[in-house]
Length: 180
Image (cartoon, rainbow, N blue to C red; front, side, top):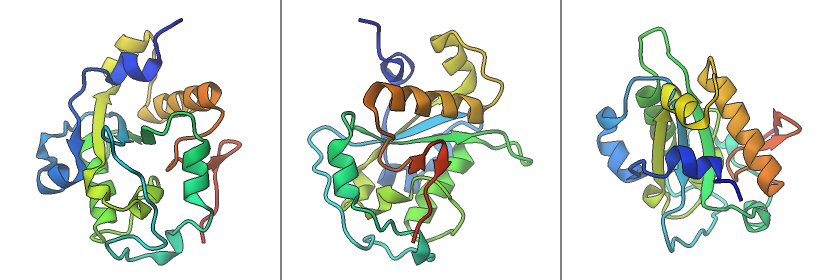
């Protein structure tokens, strides 16, 4: 059996808790790449109707039964696959991960992906890891020009392997589902 591509790319990457990164996103590189939000070992996923920290934009709460989606996903360690391409200010992974975390703490309203993770109780314990696009290309023996194309390939790989998208990648036929 061939090695799982997520294992191949992210196996030896250090994982940081959301709480650790909230206090220090400077450790994340400014390069473009992909990041994952994962469950730590022995973490029990419990969903709330409302996040522990009040989000500024309530319309992004998911109405669907997240527990049902989580329970039917064969790989429920990986909760979210995100991307970060270079921005005008030269930042990428560090800024995108910081936006995700600040969104979850109600500090910014501008992170469109991954919102379902904020409906998990004790979400500050969830883990984040990342890999640069250059390393993804090297480890996967591919040539992705953008983090967006690498993200799409990883999401498609996940779906083809597990017949479901990661919990917080709320997609349906390649398009994000509408939120309440």
